[in-house]
Length: 549
Image 1 (cartoon, rainbow, N blue to C red):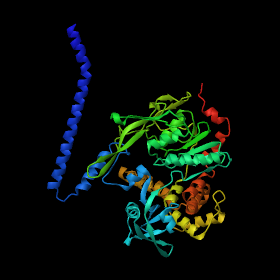
Image 2 (cartoon, rainbow, N blue to C red):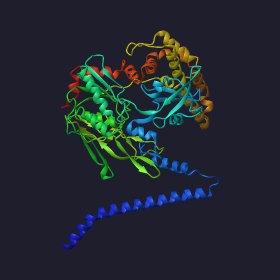
Image 3 (tube, rainbow, N blue to C red):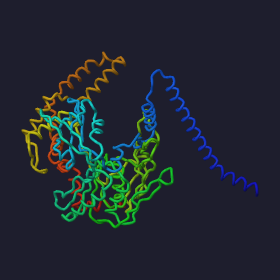
Image 4 (tube, helix red, strand yellow):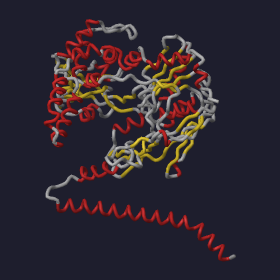
């Protein structure tokens, strides 16, 4: 009997011993590799033929190490303005987006935000930046120029720009900038449905959504479309508070699980909701991520809203900021989050990278079945799948090339300078004459369509030559190249007018009515809005939230 007891104790201890051995082996591997890394750098520093910059070389080593995990884990070597803006939504600067203009070889103002120092000083989109406090910025890329525009709140500097043929100087005082998380809300065309567009989940997001919802209800909104398309997420607390606007008190919205016990947390709604019965449609797309997925997933799991659009990004990770030596910061993934049904919607498998370093997507066949509070079937992995799928339009490549090109941007700048005003959003349309002028401008600007095709053709020629098939297919490749070279840009611009014009009108609307006007313009003939109004005004809404027997 005594021997059996000993055997039983040994069997119970065996897993613990195995785990301890694995831990010891792991620690040994870590120590061995750190010692190896340290010695290799010392050898390089002592014997390499040229001098090395320690910050650069070690920085490369850190970046390479971080590429082995997920893309959300990142190292910031010192106090970083982008990190602070990421966490709080605030930064000190002038409140403008900038872009690099290839022809000018300079940064230009892409969009001044309404009510910020740049807009109030008179800076306009399209202004070419010449100098900042007397320092010429020609050839500088946008990150460098952006860092020069930012600085301590309250400091004043001279911004010199060129507008057309005229040079202008502005004295601008930097301020703490916090862009609105709800740049636009309003009533939709049926007069009974409110609309809220949320861009992020940084500090104050819930307050802005609450204020917008309150004002919409006072305007008579009986239904709501909550737009999270393009929203990359943010703070988990803001996500929980926003979900709480629509969910009863005491509901578990999300919980996290990580390697360290202190990262395991559960988040519940803490107050009574603003409205737990108003019919609600949440719009999402492939760039809705993180906190957007927590909100949409929680509302789906509690059968509180119809989710509409396309499948979300699938970011099931939670990050926290950890301090590292010498004033650095490490934004580190510490846990996965799970929404009320118990599912984790992480779409990408960063634990098993492909041979080329790319990451694979969890296939639908490996996902697991879960159920909403009302019994509807939902699945983990692959983001939040909408209850109503509205597929985005397929767009010709020329649209992407136009939006990225300086010629498209320059045309809108010239249009703005030539038209002091335009009609209000909803009434503004491009005339046939305006679109013809746009076509003429693009055709004579040197814009070349089909660059990706020509690049693929170039690679194909190279492969064919190396494989020894050049003589066999030379004639066919020459014909293809001739067709691509003689591509009629004017014909393409006219053929795709119905798809190009909305992007053109959106950019023009931004020039006159800033971000809120751009959002309004994009809602015109938006297929998701059309479909949402159909669902909300019929029995389909209730039917979609019922469990299938």
